[in-house]
Length: 583
Image (cartoon, rainbow, N blue to C red; front, side, top):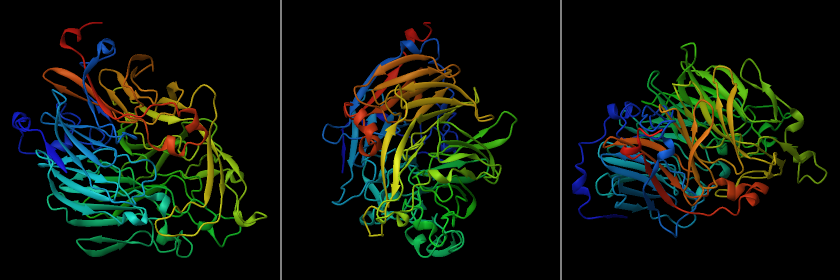
């Protein structure tokens, strides 16, 4: 329910509402932050340079806001700023409106979550979306909610999927041409990944697009087209519970009028079950799991797909964000840093493979990526077939790098058109992994694998890397003791910002990686920083609150960081006018 603070709303002078043109111009319009990614391209770049390499050392806190002491856990949100109000989602499906000048709460909405929700990887929420006079966000019981921007009152609330079957929703929605576009979460429960589009005004479903072959899409309430070809790359009926959760949300490429969603791991993790019938276990790519998929935003039809890890068997989800950019030769490209440890460049017109390079060290599962874009597998590093084991219960254990939490997980990278570089939050770790027998049961974990994550270097796990997308060269690297699990932002001021689990928000020189500023927020940062301009000053905000998948799934790594304090707060910083010129 929403609780409004009397008087604050009247002072904000609310405008008519956010338009499609406003969303299209989000990066250039520096007084607001209207979209996840600071632009639907998700470059996370700001043209602001009031704060720059010379004066960032003078940045100070402006205000902080507590998300409440009883519902801490991971705070992975990206704030939005519109018309004097900051909108922030919190753990356990909460949404706050805060006066951006004073830090005072305007209203708060708490979703009434049912018993029995099944979130895989913490009770987080990664952000909201604004359009017209409404704000939209997803809840852990797999619903999408539209709230009135001024009051926080519910305008409509719709069911995405059945939470009792393991579905949930944690990503920020994407809005394109009056449609609210969502994915789904729940890849560990044998769900089916899907993208849905709703009318932003009414919440009525316009189209659906399952991302596992064999399932039918819909358009305006009628069946449209099948995804892929039935049983082309899936044996038997396994496609019916094939995974491929679209849990990170999508990118919109305005130049090609394409939305791009990533699809997660196929289900179950045990790849031998998904290649049944072939003694070598090479049958079937299990499309479109572990893939990037380009779709028409008006009807959900698939334009192209690119599968980063065919026959995936290490939980290398393909959901990581796909960022449009222009390369050094003026070509329009996409970049994506995959869980599997490779940084890919694709063509924006058709999603065709251009190039790929490893961005983490000691990758074991593949020797590289061939000229067609397929991995060159190291077959001995595929977790063993449990049916070949003496007891039939546990296949051969392998040590795989990266771990299933990925060379890069959900935490978004940033791209600077000034330097041409991508700034990629990554982690250097491996895992013992093995396969086990498993059968599907609604609402139960559907893995067929066991694992233990382990660090591979003594001095660091986290690694922020500046990558040249033209060559794959790593220009600089910042090493961090704990895993990096928060988003990255870059600015025209020549800066790169990201947070650490140890609690620091840090600023780096975008060209050299030199650390220029840091501030201790009191809890680990797994949120996504933003920046905007107000009254002639540049502000920066980030959520602080340690959590997410690492402490829940991290094995030996989780033990290494179990001293980190939880929390739940928003920190806002600024450069005082009198210090703006100080070097």
